[in-house]
Length: 537
Image: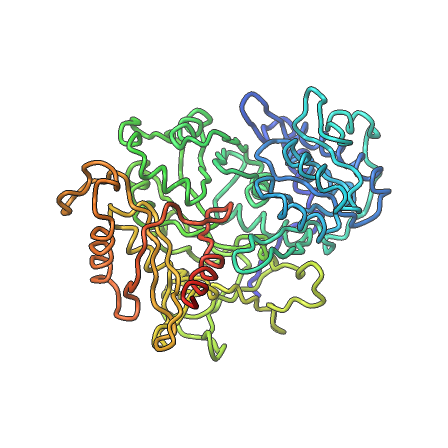
């Protein structure tokens, strides 16, 4: 294991250390609201005192905390673990059945959630017998659904400070559910050590320090960004405006050094015609990097943004089971299309998808990693089935390493399929299709075939009015004014010229929208089920 050390204290020690080091430094800012590290630490103390009283001080009691993009999340997140409980992260964007699954599977007893989620929990009260207290985090007027309690009321009744407790850094600090793109969402058990180690790993990989200002243009508050910034003593600016140009203006106004965005939003930003007229350094003169993760960032979008913003647009890689970061491009070793080298203290290898033997550099295989950020296991599982006896975790992703140890991902193991025993990667074909200006979005999957195994099927969202380029008659209005089948044939033919024989698109259909998860990943599992049903019929 690489030589890598990190603080051996509980997760909330990140905040306590930052508050002692710089109590007056701004920790997090959202709109007109700003909290210093000292104020955030004090607020976490109040949450901890309430949690300890509400749960009876029982170690590991499960407390749901919605990761809304608001300073209140940071206080309830650190306060919950300081109170001796385990945080169960709740995505407030998921629907009723998803919320029911998370609360029931994790046996959540207490929850800090926004009003919309509290309303869902009120409807689900009969199905969640373990849930006894719901605290609403966004009800300043005190109006809350059902028997819920406003946050300010709960904290007003709490003791002045939490009773001191001793938390084992090896204990479970957090339960984070997977996105469920390849099956039912599973609860990932992360220890205090996992999260503290990854906070330092991320801060080092992203080059964060106490002078850094991060702009989070994200739909949710991600613990990676929170923990790494608090570890470094950096200021976090939360941008809730979905408009991409507004986020750049916010970054410039805040003096941001780091801009965090999801690939789906960065793709929209790269395609936004207003960016060309946004003036010099639209993200601000202090911006050093745009960082992305969660799903694939198209290389052409990264290059366009780099050229316009004048800074590297880099991608990282990881997953919930890894706290989450394992790889990240370095600003001085920026190569679009790759996710970079491992973060400090992490090892990576690739194994053949069939033999499971390690493969050489440049050879395609399943990505395996190990390091201090690797989860303790899954909720309800006796032994982590994806971790072998030597500590290697099988990620389910397929890729290859170059001579410098940089990783390029090809696809999910669950998404690839075979045509005449050749591996076909849907995402690779999507990248080729996406370079056609007539394609606004696309998704690729396999159509079952008894002879070849799987035929490439492509669902294509046609652009309304792209630059016609070399396509006469196109770009003169909307797609209703053209022969859609002719356009699909032309798009397919152009893509097939750039694809290997086994990758060629055999079937193409116009679709209204690509099905995606809340994090922007293509939702291929449900699509495949529909294609199989159609093929069987």
